[in-house]
Image (tube, rainbow, N blue to C red):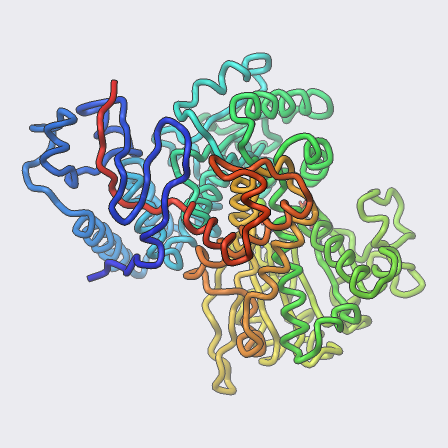
Length: 605
Ligand SMILES: NC(=O)c1ccc[n+]([C@@H]2O[C@H](COP(=O)([O-])OP(=O)(O)OC[C@H]3O[C@@H](n4cnc5c(N)ncnc54)[C@H](O)[C@@H]3O)[C@@H](O)[C@H]2O)c1
Ligand SMILES: O=C(O)C[C@H](O)C(=O)O
Ligand SMILES: [Mg+2]
């Protein structure tokens, strides 16, 4: 029996409010539907396939539209898992890409047909399925999206829709939307500009929101903002599904995104918007533009920064040193884009706070490398965002290579967010053997797998078996020659963004503050025990993603209360939130996580 014990979440109730309320209590409350007959069978939100009981078949006009035998949810679940395992057996030995896409297709078909069953198999098998619906396979899906396309998911707002967005937003069928993930497709993972094909990323991120944060799937909205693409291959592809024009720039670009934000928040003033995979200039530009006005955050800049900070603090603990020693860690960051700069800035702020020194003083132990090598003050046309981290060329020369910097600095941590696969080559990794740390840390955080700065196996082989290792996409643990296991951490923002979104939503915070983001990072950093951290395990297993998300969500909510920006959620007002203890907050968050079980459907005209 593959069915998992759901006791832990069986008391979780659906969120309140909205006209399509589906409660997921142990004895599930009814769910109101406004359609009947085959319209229900074709609606993945309500469809139960052969699982409709006889009474519902009568009530909803389904008699005769389904085979007579009623199959239980458990049987449907087992049947799906069996077909998935049989696909695995039948594709043994085939190229990885072929197998991954075949797995994605079978999951996607279920997603399109029956969301309750889809999310149940996803939640119960998150370790196996996250690499398919999220990184790395989601990257492959985006690359092949125009060919894989069968039916729409989410909404598309294009440059041609200027002036129409306020009415278009009402085309979305759900009355309530809680979480929106938006991309303009300009920097999809480390794969560059994929134009409209980038829609796969908001879809995958929102799948994680449902799986990890228990956001009701009826209340999520993936958004593709199609402002053109500069990807010539796509522009020349006759099957490309996006606008065939170069990307809008400057004010023309901003007018489109401004219009979308106004439209979205006019219809759903309580929604939380996550920006995802925007090229650096627009990632920072839009964050500055909207973060004080709308309830939004940028996952690549802010979510990644928190996950990386938790990892960096974990490496200090892994060395058996007190956290205060973080101020002495020498950290080389390779990649000075939206993610690399977000991480560096947050880590420097943490050092400044801990040591009681200025931000400028706290940059001393940080070294930033971009495509032109080490960033120093000598560089002509220095990007204003990197100025604070530019080194004095008297220390190391302008443009020094990664290996040169590693050999000179002997850093405690080498962290990659460059999008360039294999850039931590044998020479670089071997140079890390001379690190000043007894447990050097290597984070190859770029996605998807082929874009990781190095593989886990190479890191342990060349940099030494005593390292701590993290990667953005999953790798198998490594069997070391000394008989131990080299643990692979998935240093991915998936450990934070679901909790940031959920805590923000359930607090009714007006905006996402630095305090909320810091609380999320600190919660993750303190989640693992000393014993685990000393084994090199910095983040929880993805199997515990709902638990860590509830904790992170609670930390975010409590920080929002401290910042005095909460308006409450549903029947729970700001005063109720402020009176909750830490445990009560975690309980409140957990009770509000949606959990997939079939609710009785009741028809209402
Ligand atoms: N693990 C995670 O949670 C996570 C989160 C966000 C981003 N990422 C990954 O990080 C990567 C970068 O994302 P981004 O948004 O910062 O992209 P970006 O395009 O904004 O930045 C890339 C940076 O890498 C630098 N770079 C390019 N080639 C280089 C080279 N040969 N040597 C050194 N530096 C080089 C560029 O100069 C630039 O500063 C992507 O692969 C993305 O998938 C991972
Ligand atoms: O999508 C991911 O897996 C992490 C991150 O947001 C990225 O852009 O790579
Ligand atoms: Mg991203």
